[in-house]
Image (cartoon, rainbow, N blue to C red; front, side, top):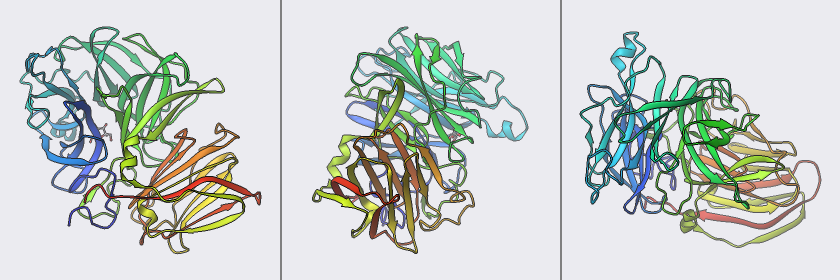
Length: 481
Ligand code: FRU
């Protein structure tokens, strides 16, 4: 049966079948969150790209919809975004029934194969029935190729500062910003990033939004840029910049490189337009281009991260983005009991299936290890004062690609508080998401245990006694039943 297969995520979004990569067209409209995604309906590896489609009322329970956008003579349908054209600036609908407008990249594969470099351009399509059926604009492309080989991934949003539409595009190694009155005629207004941030690979999937620094009135803009390769733990990853945006030009305050998630499996993530609670909600592709087409699933491939709420914080004079699962996930968490473990050096916990569970506690100190599973299949997460170290080399199936477990994955944790902070670990059938101090440090990693983990050992790594407060192991229910 669907959604009972080995490694099938039970509370993360995955396509019914076949290949999926980036989330696309994240927009809320008329009671539903739309999730479109890069999809190849004929295979479990990447191919001619379509936009798959699903909708949800709460970001947790998803309903699959028919494919929204199919390739046409202008090319495959690569990543992009969607807006509600409330004032009908496009004329595609009416003010009474405003169109949903998707903007995406056309990728003309025949041209790429012929050695041409002008194979990417931007197109739009609209829906007058809240995403069920789509019509492509007859004037496509709305932004023809500009001479750049990598010219893609439009993120469009309504810009309150200019009273226009703004679109972000990547052009190889930097960001391009365009504006428009009607989503059809576009003009470039600025660029960013040729000499800033990480450049280990091509820039992809930009996003830009305003957040208020928690506990203050200060407003800052956050820019997301995915890069592949060049991620902190190999392959693809998403960096962020905190800075200012005057409606046309983005200026970064960031001196060092920052990552939305330091785990190996969170890529091409972007945020929702028109989120009804004025929150910034993020979804990423829970995979990595290094090995993403070889993961050991049979009928489908890839899942999305949990939807996460983004917040901005100032810690010791530096801005930090935090990502934390949306509150709606509580709906499917079956709370167990809460315990206190004081003065322990080691403790073993048993659970019917850690691979659909949440482990949560508060602790002070950063010297301990979590080991899931037994000698045969085990996942180790160590906090050694300075770093978190995730070792998935024995976590289950790892040999499908040499880059999957060739090294441990690490992140700096020195900026975590010296006082108590929360450790929250969420495991599904084929993933682990770790949130330290409510998402100040995050590691998202795929794992493929040969059998579900039944034990968790928590132990001190420096002999010091551990205090685990408000300790919970909770079961997470399937959303696909
Ligand atoms: C990112 C990406 C995008 C592109 C899409 C193609 O993962 O490479 O830049 O639009 O995937 O599927």
